[in-house]
Image 1 (cartoon, rainbow, N blue to C red):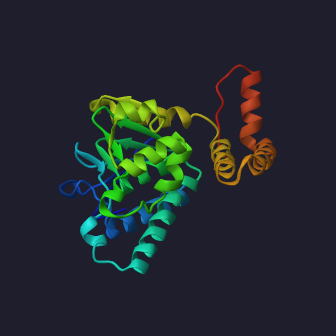
Image 2: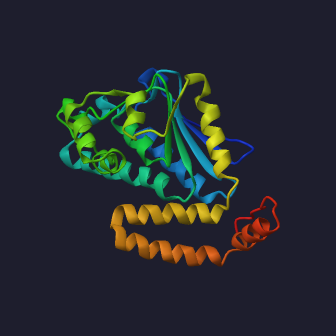
Image 3: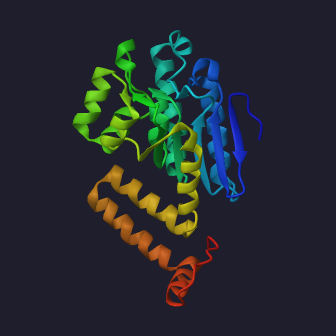
Length: 261
């Protein structure tokens, strides 16, 4: 798969490494980048060889330092709305494809960059990373899910503090408030992201996908709807070959060999 603004690499473990590759622009999310992410996420969702994803930015300064402001500055109100809807749709693809993902945040994750990171399953940050939603400084609001995902991760008060102050926070502070799952030295970021995904991928693929679907349903629809979904996927998982293999392996005191069926 060939792209102009991102890099795609599929490793032997089945992890698709997607790198936003515009270091001269601090990996800003232009329309072209969003389009290529859409292609990459669509490919990842449909390709059985892809078992997980890791998203990062080229260079050591930025994960994604926001949207391409020069591109947005000339758009009409309706065009801006369409930009937001497109970005929301693309990031939602990452969030709902049923395959675990890590945002390996290697530098600035601002605006749309933080919104992209929040759509991943988990976020690992280099010690030098910085996080923020600075849109109000431009007389703008977040458009790719920041007002919705951020409160779910850090709580309403913390989210409003970040959204309204427009001030970036350090990786250590992001970890303290629950925005990121781990902070590691820059040199260890890729290895830590890979290690977590490989640990997850030792488990049953269908069960992983169903857990993610149940969490997403409850997060968006509330406790009652989430509990109904939990019961439904509990029943579905019990009908899989992986469930039979997992229980046999447990009783036989051996490691399971899951087939994703």
